[in-house]
Length: 178
Image 1 (cartoon, rainbow, N blue to C red):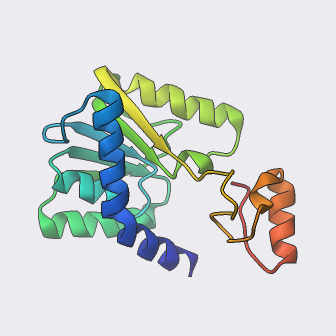
Image 2 (cartoon, rainbow, N blue to C red; image 1 turned 60 degrees about the vertical axis):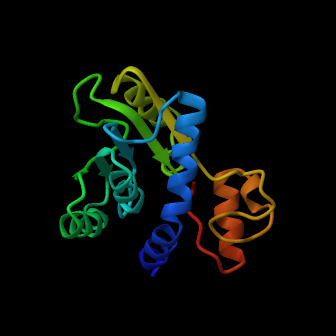
Image 3 (cartoon, one colour; image 1 turned 180 degrees about the vertical axis):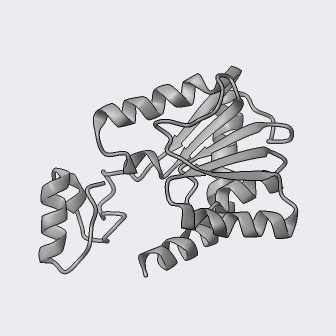
């Protein structure tokens, strides 16, 4: 059920989120659209954004640790003839050569890397993979929003992760340690 909700949410928001991320790459990093850009979508989930970026002209490589999610994106990419390659992998240890990409996107994915050392590894790897003049765009839930983005419970996300998870359970809500 959670996977279906994630698929519907991300598919419905892909165009709006994609436009926003492209605008950041343009305004903050100097990109001029995505035509010809070699892009890594790190933590791509079902691949909705990967597909959007490919439709906007990027050559996309997408990674996610959950193999089953990748099948959705692969199917759409093949059916629509989009330039996206999907691989099972973690952003902390991607198996790509140095300077392979112009742009690395971590959209709503770095927050799922829980330990500090693993987050640092994911960031180090993102920069290792960049070509000269490339950039990284990171978008994550804002814990200062009045409602927890995962449960809808007000302010619970301000608690330490373990307490937030236990508090959500007391309210009948499931929450990870994100």
